[in-house]
Image 1 (tube, each protein chain N blue to C red):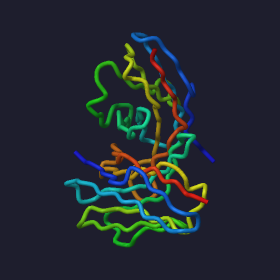
Image 2: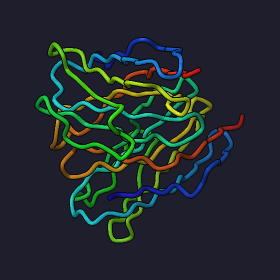
Image 3: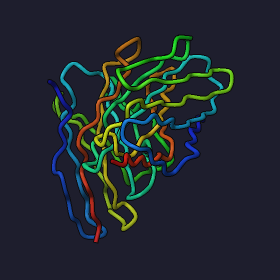
Image 4: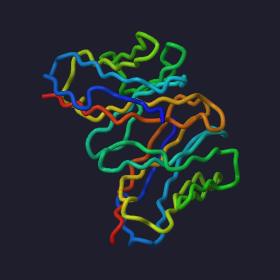
Length: 114
Length: 116
């Protein structure tokens, strides 16, 4: 079974600054997919960024980028130029190679301060 | 833009009653999922469904839970005899399947289930 750990329950950052959210996971699979989801107060789950394990290049989506370290089983999310609208819960998630089970970490509550 | 829709948005039910949560996945998607999130806790996988059968399920998904795709568009989660601890937000999700770009799970807005 897979486990996903987010060691930072809460973080805060000043508007326009950069923040990094940590995620580690444990699996015996060699290929899989990793995601960061954002959950604003509305509780909708919104995909932020995805990474395929066999790709060495780190994924980037506008202000969001990841640092994927496969050997260390680490998948951190960097948010640059933080905006007030980035305030939300952020969940790291692992999708197995079969694509039939998405396992979430415990979440990090991010507060962006003006 | 296509989206996953869930009804109702909020359901209040008496303990011991049966409840059915409904979802309409995105039309060309092949994989369907149910997750739950107890308030303040992590999102937990319940079950995945593919090709009209359960593909994977967690230990949470016991005999009181069942899923069905009755008409090719709806995807339902039934809880036969609700308990207080079933109170949670239930999320439906769907994805096109495996492979680059098709593994992303799109989530519905959730159904808040309150068992009293």
